[in-house]
Structure formats: C-alpha cells, structure tokens
Image (tube, rainbow over all chains, first blue to last red; front, side, top):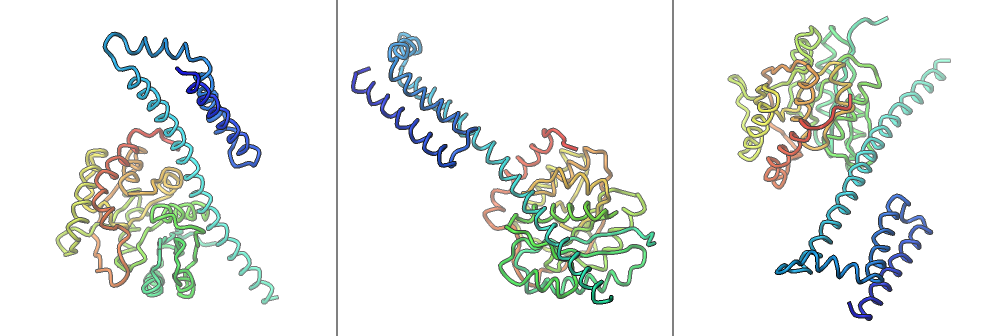
Length: 126
Length: 241
C-alpha cells in the first residue's frame, strides 16, 4: 500500500470518527449504534495504519491463483450485509413498538373521551 | 347486574365516509333485536383523512382514532386490544364497507358462545352465496387457503373474509401475536398452534357499493410471496403467549 493511500485511509477514518462523535454530541446517534460505527471507522484507520497485516491477509486469501481484491471485497460485503441486517432488526423492533404505541394511544384517547362524557352527564344530572 | 355475555363488534375503517354511517346504523339496528348478548360497537378509524370518525360517532359507534395509518392489520389488532381491555367475551370483526350482512352476526357469535369453536369464520364461497371475486383476489385467496391448509390441516376456503367471531382465548392471543400484513393466515396458524378450534360458517357477502379494496394490484401480485413468508414466519416463530 502506498503512503498516499495509507494517509487517505487514516484521514477518512478520522473524519468518520469526527462525524460520529459530532452526531453523538448532538444526540442524533444513540450510543448503541455509535459503537458499531466507531468500530467500523476505527477498523479503517487501523487497516490503513497497519498495512502489513492486511497485505499478509491478502496474500493468504489470494493463494497461488486467486484474486485477492475480489476476496477482500467479498469480506467487505459480508460486513456490510450484517450491518444492514442489524439495522433492519432494530428498525423492525422500533416499527413494531411504534404500532403498539399508536394503538394504545388511540384506545386511551377513546377511554378518556368516554370518561369525560360520563362525568359531564353525571354533573348535568346532579 | 347484567349476566349476558358481552360482545364487541370491531370495524376497521379507512376513508369510508361514504358508507360507514350506513354500516354502523345497520349493525346497530340488527343487534338491537338480539337479546342473547350485550353488544358494543367500535370503529377503529385508521387515521382517515375524511369524516369517517365523525360519521361513525354520529351514527352511534364508539370510535378509536389511531394517530397514524397502521394498515388494516394494525387497526384490527387495536380492536382486539380494545376488546381485551374492555373484558369482552367475544369480539366480532366486520368490514366497514357494508359487505358483511349484520343479520349474520348472531349466526357467527352463537357457535362461539355455545363453546362449539373458539374462532368462527364467515365464508362467502358456498352454494347459496354467489359472490364473485376478481381473478387476482381469487388467486390470492386460493394460495392463502392452500398455505393455511398446509400449516394447520384446516381447510379455510375464504381466508380473507374479514368476517369472524372469536372468544376470549383468541382475543388474548391476537393482542400479542398478530401480523400487520396478511394477518388472517398467521391468525389461523396461531390459533391452531394454541389448540383452539376453528370453524367455518357459510355467510352472505354483499357487493362493495363504494370505496375501494385495501388490496391493491401491486399487493395482489406480490401477495403470494408475502403470504408465504408471513406464514413461514408464523410457523417458525417462537410463541410469545
């Protein structure tokens, strides 16, 4: 890996960490998710900084005739797959909770209106 | 002290201002003649943008207005939650478009009250009812029926009828285990899994006089896959009740 590419990787990683910290500070990203993104950004920095282990991994995956970049891209795809899956699970959970909340709110509003109407009727009778 | 069983009729409605008032009035007139149970009627307004909620209330129904559109599945489940909260013995699910004949409520409720079944489904496909569904809809029904048969061993020829009566056991289950899309098939699977008895009853359906079906063409095309995935999810899902 060239020095320029290493520097670019480190800069991109640092910018990512900065953006994530900014989002945490402004309460736009919860800690639960920020850990994951910080790990991703940290990983980019680490791989850019320690290029040699990455080369060794590349050589190991490549073997004699294999195509190393393709294997690395596949690894990146797997990581992204699990990341998106994780977010989909969270989204499903939030979505279901939102539905339950809307249902309960609707029922509570109706109960309250009924209660108020009954109270009003009772007062009018008195 | 009223010892009559308490029945809640729940009607999910979304932008049904043209028919909801008439439907509610017709149901109220019909249940007024029944003395075997005490009836309440609730319309679950699924965040309609028209006057559905007002017209239903004016016609004498209780109205639960959802703060956002949840789709028919979410609205029906809200109805079951309302039934559980109100400690009703039986919940009857009817459509707000007037397709279901209120005169048949008694026939639907009675077997559940008698303990013949836990879940009674009104079916429109039988000798005395010549209901004609569109080709796409019919295909979807056949597929849903097949999936239900495979998963439960129960043949339900009209799985999307939307006209049913359930007892307390089902109400409790449906409050917790209910799919928001294509809810009918998973509900049969869930009821069957809990050992509850499902019964099919012939019912007369009328033509929808106004409004439009909640099933769009796009949904009809993709529905077989979604029904299959939903049913599979229901079969493999860990039970929460």
